[in-house]
Image (cartoon, rainbow, N blue to C red; front, side):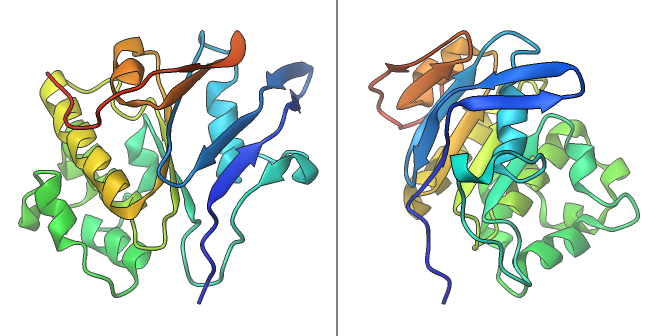
Length: 217
C-alpha cells in the first residue's frame, strides 16, 4: 500500500526560463488545506502549479512531493483553464475516466457535478466548456489523488457553473482531506473558501477564517 503524504511544499527560489527569471515563494499545502494563490498576470502563478505537478523541473532539494507510482496517476493533479488539453480528442470521456480510475467507480461524482450519465459516451468536442471542465475535475479526483491544483479552473465559466463546481469540490476536499491550491484572479472566491492566500507580489501569508459550507452565487 502506498503511504499517503500529509503535505507538499515548494521552497523559495527562482525558476529560469530562457532569459527570464521567476521568483518562487515558500508555499506549503497540508492535506485538508485550501490555499489560495493570486497575483498579476505573468507573475508566475501557473509556473508554481506546473512545478508542483511535475510539468516543469525545479530544484528537487526545494520540493516535497509524493512519489510517482507505476499504474496510477500523479497524486498531485492539475486542473487548468484549458480543459480540452486534459482529454485525448479521439477518446470518449468514458475511456479517459476509466484510465484514471482503473476499476474504481466514479458515477457518484457525475451526480455531484450535475453531469448526465450518458454524456460520458461523447467525445470532448461534443460537450460545452462547462460540461468538459466538470468532467475534467471528475478525472482529476481519482481515488489516488491526494492534492489538487486548480489553475483558474473556473474563471471563464458562468456563475451558475462555478457555483456547482466549487460546492461539489469543497465537499470532496472535506470528505477526503485533500490538499487544494486555488490559483485565480477572483479575490472574492479566495476570501470565501481559502484558509490562507499567498500573493505573488507580497508572499507573506494572509489568513482568512471561513466556514466552508457553500459558495454563494
